[in-house]
Image 1: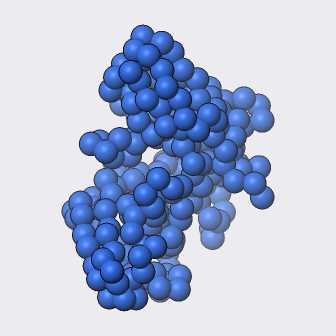
Image 2: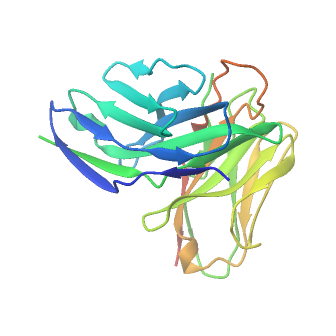
Length: 116
Length: 118
């Protein structure tokens, strides 16, 4: 069974600073994808960034980047130049092939507060 | 493309009643997953439907059921509502098929239905 662990229930960061959210996962699969989702307060969950496991290069999307360590099964999210709009719950998610179809597992989330 | 839509957005029900929530996935997506989100339990997987068949199920009692129609729209039903069923119910759609490398396998979420049971 695949599991996703986010060990930081809550974090805070000063505006304009950098923060890193941790995520570890456990799987016996070799072909999978990892995602970070963002859920702002009372707003819709949206995809922040995706990483294909077969790609060694870390994904980046503007101020968001990941540190993907496949051997360590670690997938952290770095937010640079934090903005007030980054305040949200962040969920790490893992998807792989399970019996020929896609199965998704989410972590428990990290609540990030950006302080002005 | 239009995003995932969920109706209704807000619902207030009384204990013992039943409720049906609806989700329309992104056009072309055949997989619809349902999640229950509460402050204490986080995001919990309810079930997933693909081509009108339930192929994944979370650890919820039988009062929670669902179905998917031929147009991929899905409904979730909760019977004999309990106070603890108060939550945000999220629907997510994806292609659901693991076939081609490089495909975007992420899920796209709807805005959710906020259910309050009194």
